[in-house]
Amino acid sequence: MELRQLRYFIGASEAGSLLQASGRLHVAQPALSHQIATLEEEIGARLFHRSSRGITLTEAGRVFLQHAKVVIADVDRARSAVLESGSVPRGDVAIGFTTTVALTATMPVLSACRTQLPEVRLRIVEAYSGFLQEWLHSGRLDVALMYGDAPEQGLMKRPLLDDKLVLVSGVTGRRMPRKLSLASLAERDLVLPGRDHGLRRIIDEACAPMKLQLKVVAEIESLGIVKRAVEAGIGETILPLGSVAEEVAAGRLRTAAIDSPAMSRRVVYATNTGRPDTLAKAAVGALVHDVLRDMVRSGAWPARWIGGSPT
Image (tube, rainbow, N blue to C red; front, side, top):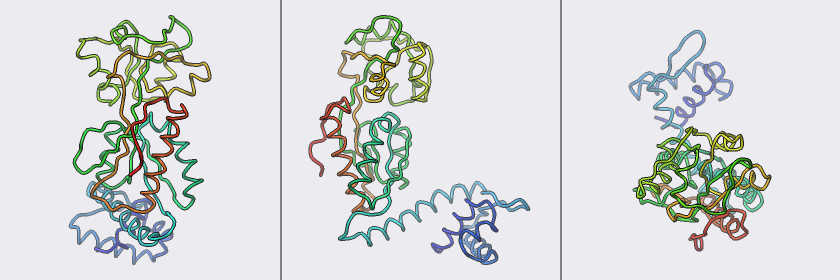
């Protein structure tokens, strides 16, 4: 199995036809067909369904495509690591953010990277923490900013900050106190994500010792829709303060502190301990640490900094 075969296979899967792929890859169509057929023979499975309309991946092809992309990405990283050795950081770094972290940190991190690391190109992915963990393990991500510092084999998690959760309400309706008890949440109509969501689990676990039954009037997975529902007066929600800072500043939402130490989430910087480091990856790690620390200290991210100094 050769690297060019993997690149040809990926190119063909993206093009949807061998004719288009041959043009994009600058290789004659018969040679491309031969290389893919050889690859299928070595693997022992058909990778494409072929028809007069083009090619589509088989189930085996879809599985193999995920692994082929990781292999090619690792080769590219290895090449970049050699080229950048002893020089300025350069190359691609894939970084993942959870949705609420992305809302607060993406633009500051991206802006700082463009200014301080002009030869580094960030590839930013937004997803739930579970997906980010999976993609760190598989190599699709180099680093991730996500919630939860529980030990996990194969991952290094460096705690950065504790993100306080607050009650979020629209600007009309009942009076909004500056602080309210955890027990009083049971009296409010809430719009929350489903029970499998990490934020919902924290809320449910905080309420469990008191046997609180929350009145959830709607379960919504999209952060944007949750905030719009709250603005429309459908209910209130519970979110990190930083994720609604823009709406609060604009006078569209109000917040109240929740008097419970359990109502917080720990943001960690996570990497795969089994994958080699690069100069660009290390530089991005230090940059992310400094950007988030400065945001907390300036009040741009209302949280408690616990990250210390970068290692």
